[in-house]
Image 1 (spheres, rainbow over the protein chains, first blue to last red):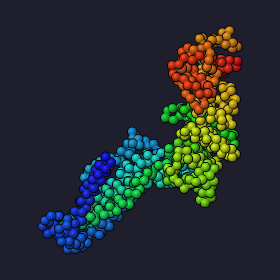
Image 2: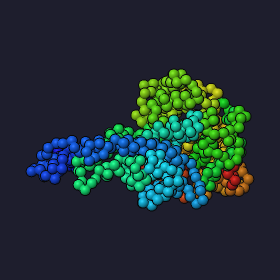
Image 3: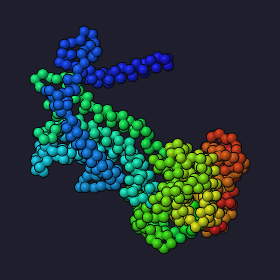
Length: 280
Length: 343
């Protein structure tokens, strides 16, 4: 029975691994193909039977018929990292306040205020694009990195608040009180006791912010023209009358690389049982 | 001296403390005894600054604490839950308040090591709290409270979440530890009369947010001022038996007793140890609890629920008929207003 269970378990794992890895493998092999390699058709195995070429990769770094993704890649990194850092910093402070103190504004209480933050993510992006466009134009920040950072902070902070409120609610208040009695004022309590215990929450919130920020196409497209280009927009600009699948595949791999690295880095934080031993 | 004067506290529209006045001498251990919901934890939290009273005053050696935030009060507290900092190891947990108070890290670590050795955790200083048992975690919390050398130490039922045997052992250890804390005002909240009688220099009985009696534990036990006080300090619970006094005290089916009291309605508080097996009254056993070497038997006698305590283990089954005798003369008499009457 146990052998059967193990066989079933490992078959399922293998199947799922194949399901997850296959698109990457496909993109990787396509990125090393030429037009003939993509459309010519292989006799048996498409991702083995082809003549390798680096045309696709060359077109990402200023090669013929391509673009240079280095600048858009750097722009995307700057915008995503800065906006995520600001969102996490502000969102964490807001979330701690919402988790620990009672607020009252007209009919609204803490849960309403938390929902107000989250509700900004419920709106379709198209609704926000015109106000954002007008605001950035007024500020003279259209088609600029600071302008995009501001917009992304507005988009990412609700995610940070949402994740962190939930996380802080899970940290027992007894821990704050014990820190107070050990001589910490509320700010020191937050910095020395709560924040170190909120690392898994910060990692989750940070990951969400980075993923959403990095993958955004809509605002990167509508709020920039010629001066500032982010990676998703640059990748789309690769497209022409003949879809260059080899270049697009290479670009797709470049664009997911930071997220793959991120996944490996944060994995160890997420697997820890952070709050064990706080209150029993 | 720690003093509380006319302290009242309401939380979520519920009155937790009503006009409490008490003083606590340095170097003494005061046990605050009361049932769950009596207001013990609220009192402790108010003294620690975690709850703000509606009115009244809390002062230590004349300095007013009433509006002082908790981080400015020289108070240490151990709560029912075992609260430790999960991101710090055991040594850093104990050193934490010292470091916050500005003690140099090596000195704080040395003091933490000494405190941990005192509570028997010398070999576990580098572990995380999550790697310790419940009892060990509470020892860490106790060490952290002791290392601060705060003039006021609040112990809010610190052992209530431990098993019986461990609780007994910890209690003895704690008494030993506190003996060296001269000059510290220690308040120990408990729901267990035995614990209160065993530990405190002074005892305060609380019920429904009020102090019902305070004094030396033995004298309060021997002469509770009211039926409420008698109910709080007796475990097993005291048996309240109503009677009418004319020429003699008339207990109806339970008989008569020659008390000398003015005529009227009274209640006799009969301790469980003053009901004995073997006697003229036929009672029905409703429940038997064997605790260690004692047997607590719940009885139904003439429509009255009574509790009997025996210093031996006696197997009994619910439904059994048992002859019992009541030592009515050993009981405490309370008037219609609940106050104890001399007989």
